Length: 497
Ligand code: NAD
Image (cartoon, rainbow, N blue to C red; front, side, top):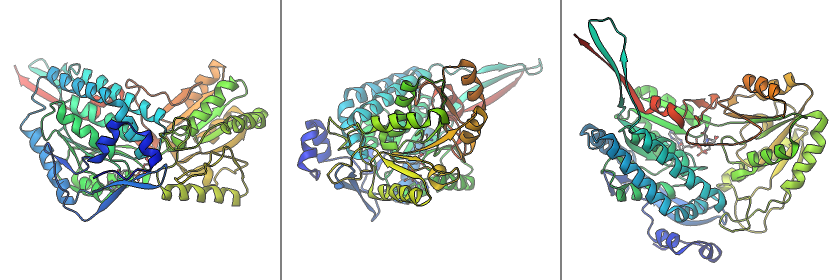
């Protein structure tokens, strides 16, 4: 089937991306084969930059999901992956990383088309996914056990073993990196895998499934069940899964955790955020403005770590906001694939309408709403970057995760007040402190309740840096050495000497 692309978008895609879109492999990928989904639910793949349906696929049914889990179970139980020498798993994962790196530009274009993000952002996503895969490929040969000082008549060891079948349920904002945070450590330690990508962004996951097959990862080790919430719910209800790694909204995370209670499956939850950026008067203000902009306008604000609450010293509030608005006006909204675009659309009309409703509510509640930068004169799900000042703590715009390009600004008079405002949120994913006073940075960082504190920077991700939240932002850490805890079980062996 030829993809229904507008002439503009067709002109922005490479021959390789267009060729792939002619026949995208969007069926469930089970035991090394693409199988026709057994359901009546057809889902459109929409280009958010034009609002045009590009192609469609059929969602995996509960039966398809059960088959995917059974395939992963069989692949785990017969040891075709977990019993390989660790260096063989490492080699295959490095091969997969090389294949992904070789196709990075094609995958980045598909990701920009699917999510609406700018091509520059999509390229960073694919680079990150490759880096995470290479990092965990190295871990396959690095996990060691221990000899436990049990009573002398026993020899006791602690060894790390694969858990079994791991399932991933992922959101639409960073489809490939977030999948890779889960898939790479799971596979490195010998687990098998079932992925359920967001219904809105299935392309890069489908592409990766093809590359897994090409990299010689045995059939059944990686399986994909595309579909919406019903497919995700079927996955969480299917017995035979040993761990579910979920990234998405707090509400869905709660549903996943409830379902996991019935099957007694381990879960890790990476959920929403409403992250504060604290700017003190003694900060490098130029750097702080750049950091605040990156924190909120990146990916059009559809970022779990979006620094959506600017908490700024009252003495510099007006000057800081004026300069921020001025620089924001220079952003260029447009189709993510267009080279001039620096801010893309939101994922869907539903999300755009939701964000608009929150902005209108803020204005009705008495806040001052400033629209910075022009809306483009074109179809697509655009929201102009918006700065909200004068909101009262507790207003919906100040409490709810907007997931769009909307920044709320609150002034503070003292360091204590700044910390109190920052921590006055149901969420605790990320945070930042901007100050050139080292003692203040340490003092404030210690008091912020968040999984990550950045100081004089924002949004630094690296495969070595553990990432996750506290409070309503979830629990469990992805990336870094913490993945050993999440994707292996500790076995104690006691031998009577
Ligand atoms: P979402 O919760 O709507 O969907 C996430 C995934 O869950 C999708 O694959 C969806 O199909 C699936 N799903 C929906 N209902 C389900 C159910 N009942 N059972 C199982 N699965 C179900 O989230 P979204 O709108 O795709 O993504 C945006 C949200 O994700 C935001 O809240 C954002 O903060 C969060 N997020 C968090 C992180 C993080 O690392 N903490 C990263 C990215 C996004």
